[in-house]
Length: 333
Length: 257
Ligand SMILES: Nc1ncnc2c1ncn2[C@@H]1O[C@H](COP(=O)(O)OP(=O)(O)OP(=O)(O)O)[C@@H](O)[C@H]1O
Ligand SMILES: [Mg+2]
Image (cartoon, rainbow over all chains, first blue to last red; front, side, top):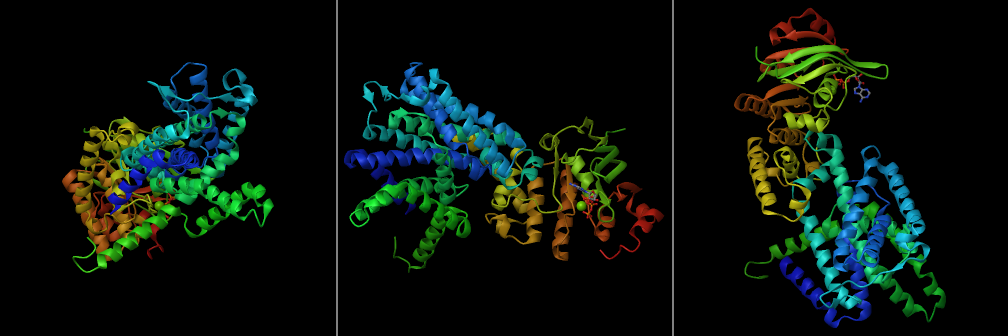
């Protein structure tokens, strides 16, 4: 049953470029990119228990690295994506160093500082980043295939999102992933079981930043132009919302949170458009409306379901499972 | 003379003005069951924390076999073969029983981030081997019925057993147990005693155990060390310690637990 469901979903996604509208493909790309980025943040915050407000900064590092590598260093666009991830990973590991000592709110402040340092650097380091005016990002091209619109880009985004999901799923079923969860659940017990806690935290920062950097590079490639304003702090908050609402420490939750909260503003936009006849000024309030809905959702989830949509999903599946098993034999097959 | 399993020399540890250990020394012989007893606040847990590397003594040395370990961080001592359980349960609460015990195998596998993420054959083979070993430990401690349960939902006595299982899964040379039977009913205590004795006898694991139940201590220990206000007030066989006037004095009026 689950196999069938995921098969159908995958088939629909593969066929999307053939029948989806331009708008649908734009939204689908943003969903895929969000999945990669949110998964990255979840590895750090949900699975390893290290709160970070630096997510937008690592997206920026990925975005500007890709833009620089393609335009100024002549690197192929396809190679620039993992390279941008690697640069973000390296800087992520450096930002992670204070996590040996800092926890909770203090770590949040340290990663917030990292955000502003990156923002400042992006504005001032004009020769590399283009400063306040930003840079344009050429479409990746290989063997005559040029990913210069959402329809063509979608295949790559889908592939990378699936790879990221598989990687994370495998990781948390094996030794290094368990070590991260152990550090989150009980640092002292993890240490006496032989886990090098510092090393675990640094690798969580590195891996997380790699994913987020790749997401940032893809976002830059999708929008074709980036500037310091492309990566505001609110982007980091949005990513945290997706992690919390989707489900901390859950791979499936990362997908639910990223896709759900990327689609939500689109739904709101459609609703406000439909209602603009009666309330013409509603459209201008869309961004406030979005923030409001996100905030309410976060509060509701933190209070009623701290494990997020992933937990709701698991419960629903279990219930279905229970009812199908109650059916008389021979039925339901 | 063969090397001692553990040599503690002149350990001093204080927190602010409170001195938890003042000049404690003792040796633990390989393969023995060594009990540390004493009234509440005597410094017993502090001693185990110094041995496993969670506390740094201000003075004194600790040697594990021939290896000085005084300056080593906890994970390095674990690698040498020191495992422990905690007085207050310290499980990974969001994980299942099996996953908790699998963390005990951390030291025996080398799978790294990338080989795990890409699920390379080496990672799969290693994971399978670790799971087989965990299954042995699960069977040994009778945890089969709860193996896939999240640990947080289990009864206190069962959680204590999972902690022992996690420590045993690391195949330690030296096992430190901080009140392994506290809060258990008598049936659970018997099971725990049996598990400790068998671990000691079958695998030759040296055991240092803190325990308040005098009956059990006198029954199963080879050596008993008595601490009081951070000092060692007696050391010897159970019968020697039982008749020691200092011990009788320290325990006078505290017989209620
Ligand atoms: N982390 C700590 N910070 C401050 N004081 C501590 C700390 N750990 C232990 N102490 C103090 O050191 C002394 C010894 O404590 P310890 O926990 O070693 O005693 P114990 O013998 O294990 O007692 P119990 O039988 O109650 O477990 C106590 O006075 C305690 O308050
Ligand atoms: Mg104690």
